[in-house]
Length: 470
Image 1 (cartoon, rainbow, N blue to C red):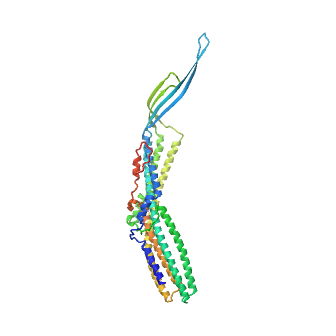
Image 2: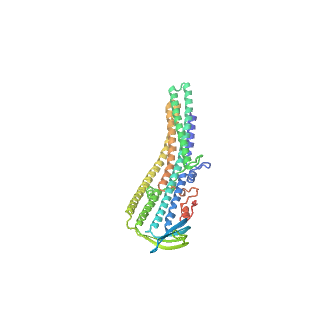
Image 3: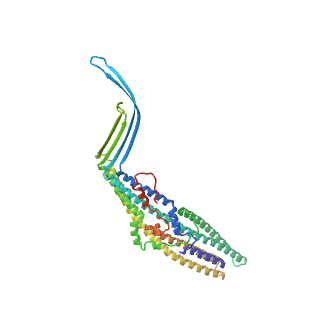
């Protein structure tokens, strides 16, 4: 029985050591997992496409500064027939009919340039730029969420792997305990009740082991979903406290100003301001310069007219007086939307502050829980050794040994769990203040720069090819 308990202690020590910040050269690391998630996760890829789509709103708005050119052409076969009446003062009327067939061709073009539209084009351009910035901040939010999910998936798999190993070895120890109890029962040292207790505890341990296997398989599947590859042997991970804020007040100030959800709301407020200006531009006069040219061969009215050419350049001024009241409702609607966006900004700041406070509390609690769990493991180890020695002297029952052993297993599993919570809490706080990014984590990966695609398309006048943003 002593050999079995020493085997359990040795395995538990190995499993616990796997969660400590010690380098393992041949294993997958958490930074590597975060790098793969940043490169492979489809949520990030989809949001990058959304940012590129938002970029196209800027050249759409800038098109209001540019001329609009239309070309037209028409070809028709026409037949003309005329009936003419001729009458004199003293003679009867005479009638004559003339018929002819002709081909009529017309070619023309029109160019229109907006000169004045109540600054509508400028407002649309500024609004599009603010929406591009908001989309970039949404991309930052997505990156943070994915990186945090990757860290959680990595640590969950480490925890569940260690837990499964502990539960498997616990079953092995209890099988050995049952074998030794049967031998002692045959020799008359214990009763049948002791055997039944050992059998019951073994059955319960097997059930718990099966649940641990289920959790392990679930964690592997989640790892594959988030990170994009099958997990290998995972190396231990360390907290990232050095990259985070040093006190709660600093975290709150930074989160209320720099968290991507807050900055997204700020840009949405700016976009709503320009939406009001766009709506108000409908009340201002519009001035367009229009030039046209037309060349026609043949005529729809006279067979003898063979060719016609005309060209013109002019200005068109449109002064809105009353358009049914719809424009005023649009302005009021835009102002209410602006009020909504301002309140959304306040909500985002309050939410960021609450999230930082919660993350800070979880991190502080996790630090203390690790110390408490380590103390509990030491106590359980000492208790098991003492109970085992007393059982050999007949001062303790088999049930006492089983209970002490189970307490040690539970204490070690708790330590595994709280060590996982300690690392995850540090990443959660980093995300809460808005710092969870490849740059801050110093991941070995090319960082996607949305400004590249923006400058590729901003001043594009023609073309349907989509740049790759690289």
